[in-house]
Length: 488
Image (cartoon, rainbow, N blue to C red; front, side):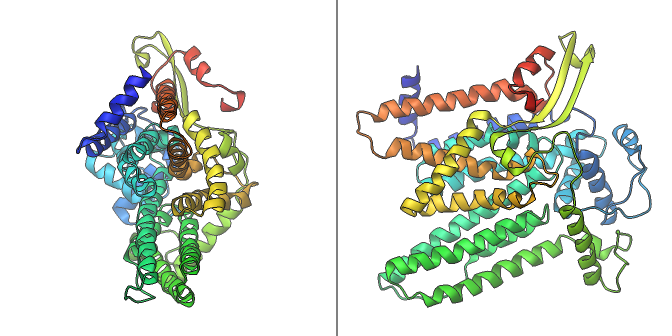
């Protein structure tokens, strides 16, 4: 069976339309995981209590309003206009909430499907985007499709696509920025190589792909400030990679420093302009929290950000599901978004049931990706492969800064932003396992091993699907899914 599957893939992959058809099918599979029964539960789940209600008032007034303590009951019952007149102090920028508002506009505020539509849409679009990234980095379409498949069935990515909170949207814009970043690096490496071969051209030049990456990271930072880490990491890598390549090829090195200045101005200006533009609703309105605290909007916006920074750096209140960055790697404390026990109608054919939503990764993909990304960093130090280095930089930008906040209240679901990079590292490692250091006789054995890996990952996705999608199950089934006490 496994050999037959491998042979079929090998035959099908030679078809001229295989790549596009397979990309569509994998995206459709990811859409099923993200959109089926998206409106369940019909109540506000976890931090949706903040972001959905904030999005509703942001869309109407350009800024968030305060809500009474019992607002959720009215909001969920289809009577949302119970907000107060005062502006609300919120600690995350508005881009994600504008996107949630888009779904509310399409489907209505009384439809929980509309609350979650935008996150599900972006989570689905991330799949073909990752396929495109992987194809450029690995250069093998079958393995690029494998990357898309792994993201389609990765639990963090699924749950954060089905919940109207910010982190899934942050992950999408970071991945979009990474796609443009990869395009920039490959085109610039080609340019410097041509200069080394004697081609004419400027040693310093604007880089449009880097500009698009910076705009994307301005949007990412407009969802959550952690997008700034990627802006800094991509900018630093651009300089180091340029300098290193010029040294290896014998091209003049000094322009790398001038080019770094051009890159810095491009990235900071584009990212900052995009970010500030995302606050235009608050800037143009009069009732936003802190809007009138200073004589001009720029001073007021700066004061607002100082307050928000103090909040973020001082957040240390205990939470039963908090998990620091070290725990993220082992899935040490997955975040339970929702759990209820029911009897009767909500259970369908069951007499009683449990409905749970937990941001649980696909264990094989997640743990395999963690092992792969650390192998990848060692591999890069030995081989200096451009693709390996860029994947490592993306992972470190999303994970390493949080090591400075191990004592702060953080959660496992923040790690959804590194999920695409773990997938890329895993597929990069599997591709090298398939390609390097084997005879033609042994290649089928490795292809079968990779096929078994993929099938087990698919099996685990089916096993955990009820936990990701809030599907009613008997209590004993939910308990079987809790492999470790710290997952409960």
